[in-house]
Length: 405
Image 1 (cartoon, helix red, strand yellow):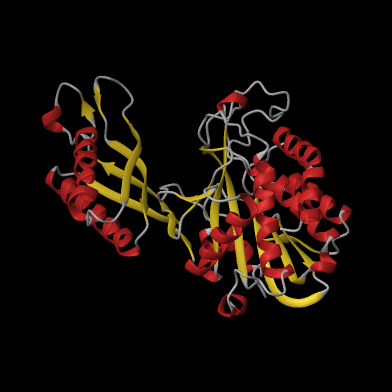
Image 2: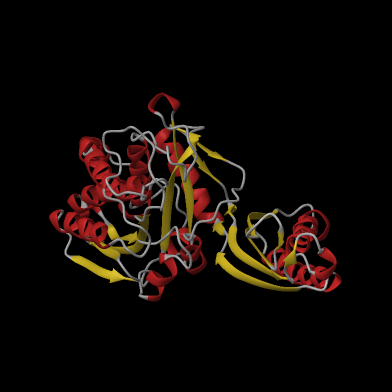
């Protein structure tokens, strides 16, 4: 990466922290991010970027920095929605919105990409090609903002795309990535068991939905262990079980809710069909009725091999050996996967964990926080990739077929 780009980003660090903390104090839920979108737009205009599209797939923003010479178009993405969580940290920039919190680092993603945008805009004369900045809403809540932004044309003309997530369970100073499948498809299901209620003293006259639902829970636990190839990863979790109104009343209905996580589409389909079969057969055996509402969530994140190879080599050059390391696949979901279905690219974790600054809680925890210095790491990674693809005339990393991709 150019030393001047690096210095410019480092000089912006205090400003990036200010942006992040302002956004942290003013979080907005998925599909409600009007003020956050306005904040991003105003900053991009301040930087002198004129090619900006608003309301892309909702409150999304797509800005383009035009290089002085022709070349490929590289896209960078950051999301900016918050979560319905009451913050429990004691930081001075604590959320001012009751019950809403940036508990996943999206405020940091936004501040990072704004810093990168400002640096690239000031150095656009050095670029052979264009950079598309995708500021995405609604990552946290399916169907997510990525699909809507793609439908509205955010990837038109894009040749390659990169994204990162500030990750509190990866130590600060480490970059975690993986070729191929990196994050899982994340699906949701709801099961309704309809029995026949009655008095707790006369079960022979009833169909106990709690008992039937309990049998369904037990049988569903066998799907992964007995129906899925053990060399392929899958998770089936029931996180919610609601039934009953009183201790002496046999409940007529029970509702189960949960999630399925997979990488392989055949495994995903197998689990769906096995769940439907188990629910039908268990309910028939106990004279109840069962209904399965299964909703596909985000597809699995698949990092393309060529772009992952470029990423590894560029990170080694930018940060030194052993900073970017391959890590195990993650069962969490991310709708960045939708971009990677359409275009080559990759997604990685920028390590943000540091117990010394209170950054030791997992994502979506009410005490979640991250080491803000990771914004410089993520920003330098973005800039290094842009420099490799658009600023070097004879890149030692990129082969001809990578340039053409």
